[in-house]
Length: 291
Length: 317
Image 1 (cartoon, each protein chain N blue to C red):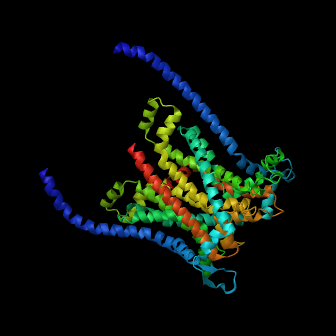
Image 2 (cartoon, chains in turn cyan, yellow):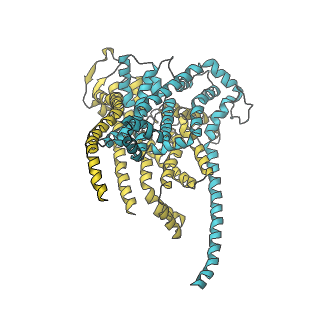
């Protein structure tokens, strides 16, 4: 037995050493592949960034110019042509408004559905999930007539209300899955200690799902900020957000790609930065919100 | 021991009686927490949907004077399915969905395998790859429209110059516009598919994977015989999520081609928005919307069955 191990050990070490170098080689290949993929992948994003800093004379040069002197001309022009602050204000109000409303409605609902004993609870949760997959046009038409009848057409409220349906459904489902994976013991213990029902929800369960709430909020803001179809039909020239202005500017003759690129900065950079800084929550939302 | 057993019931009895009432109170409390969201969804999402079903049976155009509604039964549906643009939109939507999701899955799976190894490097790569997911589809459409422009676009100019595409460019050709839009969708959403598959890969049971390594199977065998069958539930989940989203495609098409040239890129959503919100043909648009809801529901049902089956199989292994 002992002789066998001594003879067998040497080749085994050699083999494992070979395996380690093979692994290192493999990792190096994988990483090179990833870097190359990302480099190609980022071309459209880099184009968007570059265009905004391109001087107008290089904008329509044919063949396209790769080298140019960066300028802030396009950003100055954006502020001349558009009321950027008002557009930003609309975008912020619409996305934050919908996010707050969705969280207020969705977080308690998610908790209730996860804790309820009723066998209908899971079906209600599925219903919320299904609402998210409905094409917006199906609800937008009747909603448009509804808003016309109650006089909210053209206001931020109309956009906030309809965005909140999809966002609230998303938040409820997401928080449902967070609360469901949370053991009940802590709440039970708090309740036997004399904590109120609301206290068990608000002070015991809620603090443990803060990551879920951050992820939900991020997605609500992203959804409303990026939407233009709903806002295009429900807002007017005073209440329109950035996305609608961007679409309207698109195709107008006197607005160059550079100006458009600069305006697009305002509508993409905030969300991009949020997703990068809150990457952990962003990834959680993308994976957990779907299960 | 005996003391304890006798002591507990005497103490518990009153609290148990109270806890019955407490349990009722608790269920009521939970109901109160859920109610606002349920009422909201019922009023602002489900009620409009029901109204939409109602409208779809009427010839109802807001631009017509008086806004009279005439009941036409299933005429709107028949018209969508027999109308040339309607059929085109249906076919386009299916081609777009299947084409986009197929490539997103293949590329996403490859990307997920590359990113599987845990580590800082891969996490940073993932963060970069997810940037397209955050960009407004509106801006994505805008970027590609500019890149593909034949006179000054970085891609379009050279493609036309080298004779790879017609001089009018990819988006202006009736046969090339739809594939181009599929390509744009692939660019934007492949990382999301990769991310979902990656989450599935990371949840695979480690012991089975190690056993497969120890068996000396080649990496292809390992992938095909061990990883893929176990990953199947996640695969179906990623597929159905993307299919439901791709089926609703609107933004990128609306911005780049507006459904043209002709109706070569008109999707159901683009057609529905045009009919409903530009011509205010409410009944007809509602029928289009309901047809797409039906298609999405059927896809979801089919994939739910597949996921269940795959789950059972994966558990048997």
